[in-house]
Every structure is written in C-alpha cells, then in structure tokens.
Image (cartoon, rainbow, N blue to C red; front, side, top):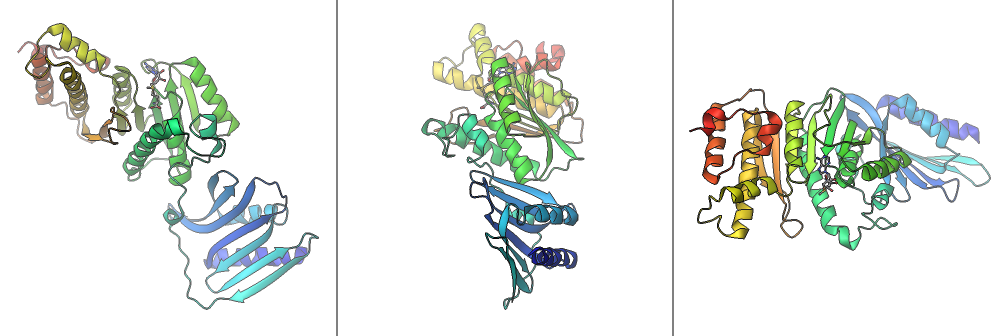
Length: 395
Ligand SMILES: C[S@@+](CC[C@H](N)C(=O)[O-])C[C@H]1O[C@@H](n2cnc3c(N)ncnc32)[C@H](O)[C@@H]1O
C-alpha cells in the first residue's frame, strides 16, 4: 500500500521538477468530522519563484498558502493517507489518481489526456475572495451569523467595508514593498476594516503584513486582540492608544475609516509625519470647522441655512485637508466611495506620496484665503502638523 503512495508522490515530484504539474486535488477526509474538507493545489509564479498555492477549503472558510517543492511534498506526505484518502494529480499529459480504501489499501490509476493542457502560473486566476464572510472572525466581530451570513443590520457596514477594501486593493496592488507592508488603521473601532485589510493583503495579495489597529477604547482593543489570538492571525494587532499618542516607527499605508471629528486630522498628521506612501481616509463628523464657522458669524447666502452650513463645513474641512496633503507632497484625490444610501459619510481622501517635496506657498495662500472667507481661525490639522500660517493669515 505504501508503495503506491510513494509512487504517487514520485509522480508529483517529477511533474513539479519538469514543470508539467497543472493542478492537484486532495479529497475524501480520512476523519469524517475533519473541518478541512479538501485541498486544491496549483503552481504559481510569485516574485519570479515557482511555488505551489494550496487552497485549504475548510467547512466555513478558505485559506491560501504558498510552498516550494520540498515543502509541498512534505505536506502531501503528511496528509496522505492521514487526512485525505483520495488525491488526483493533473499533469499536461496525464491524470494520476490515488485512492486509499477505508481498510488502507492504496491503488493508483493513470489516464492519458487527449486535450492539450498547459501549466498556468498566474496565481490571480485562483484568487481568494476580497472578504470571505465565512471566516470565523466575522461572526466573532458580530458582522455575520454563525453560518457566515451577513446579519440584516450589518449589511450597510459590510458594503462600506467591502468598497473601501476594493479601493485600497487597487491602490496597494501597484505599490512595491521591501518585505513586510506596515499599515495602521487609526480609530479602528470594532476592527471590521482592519480584518478586511488583513484578509485582502494576506490571502489575496499574498503579502507579509504588520497591521496595527489603533483604538482608544481599552475594552474594544482587548476584545479584538482576543479574537486575533483565537484565530492565530499573525501580523495583526490592536494597540490601545489615542491616535495622537501613537507614533509608528515604520508606516507604508495609513487607513482611517470614520475616525471621529478631528481624530481624522490626527490620523492624517500621523501618516504625513511617518512618511506613509499612501493615506486613505473617509472622514466622519466635521464639528471643529462647523463650530468655528458658527462662532465667526460670517455667514454668506449659503451658510445661513443650517443644512448648507453643515455641508459647507464638510467641504471646507476636507478641502483644507486635501490641500495640506498636497502641501506635504501628496498627490491627492477626493472621491465618493459608496452610494449615499449606505452612509452619508461617503467621501474618501486619498493621498499618494510623490517624490517632490512640494511645500508650495501658493497652497498655503489658498488655505489662508478659504479660512479668511469663512472666519476660520485654525483648522485642527494645521496645529497637528505645526503649520505656520501667520504671513498668509494677516493678508
Ligand atoms: C465611528 S468609529 C469607526 C470605527 C471603524 N474605523 C469602522 O469604520 O468600522 C470611530 C472609532 O474611533 C475611535 N476613536 C475616536 N477618537 C480616537 C482617537 N483620538 N484615538 C484613537 N481612537 C479614536 C472611537 O473609539 C471609535 O471606536
């Protein structure tokens, strides 16, 4: 019996060596109640290296891991027949099927294939989902039912997170990282976005990560860290801290989704100071500037109406944030990331660091003009970055 298993493994080794392995499947769990239902293996080319992507299909989640040939053979040796009784190797010219019976008898069958097959090394074709609600942490975080269905009252939140993650994916994909990508999610709350990013980066983009969720509420930070530990999510951690007091040593990407009022400014300031390559913020309430505008009493035809004052405060707050990002050399976009029905706080500020150290005084002049027009003494972000405006404010 062992002879046939050995024969099968030799065929796998040979196909790996000759680059003729198209795919492989392991099925029929040896233990009826094994949470791991089957495994799908395919060759991939990652950073010029030929590896094998194993997609582990668990009862309620998928996991993708990449291995070199030696590791791949070691894992197969451990899994057949201890975890799986059936294995099929598909090569460019033949299918090799290994069947182990309940009594431990192993048979092997080889079938030549008629169609013309090729190895496909594009690992993107067999991607993990952007967010997989069946992963157990979504239930533990309160987003899904035990069966992995998004609960009715979390549908809007899920859509926001999904959209945000989609945009972050398109922004991060073209970026180059030395080895590990360092990310801070500021004002991380219950961690929905933080976990979504973790899934996206580790399971879909195959990146090594160091993701910190920064959250001021100790109860939340503690609870989320317990969930992280229970799921053994390496590279993910919640830090109990205010955004102001948190100074990351290394930061590639700064994320903040609906960090309250000026917490968004603290997050942007932190990203700029740490030299983050990418800053992606969806601001929340805009009280600071609205209160300044109200205090100044300098209403124009638009801002004398309450609703428009509110909207104008949003526009002015975020315009000044965008201008300050530009001033510090970030190419900045302002966009809507999701339809209003899911959240009215649907504006996204995206800043990508450019090589030019802008510091253009014209930008400071634009900010000073805006502030003067609406009677704003100070935008919170100025203070957080210690920007000097005296020359412009006096004009
Ligand atoms: C509206 S929630 C958003 C949570 C999460 N980003 C999301 O969208 O699901 C804002 C979170 O930011 C946290 N927060 C507010 N101000 C903060 C500060 N200065 N430092 C750290 N966290 C802060 C709050 O405790 C809260 O959990």
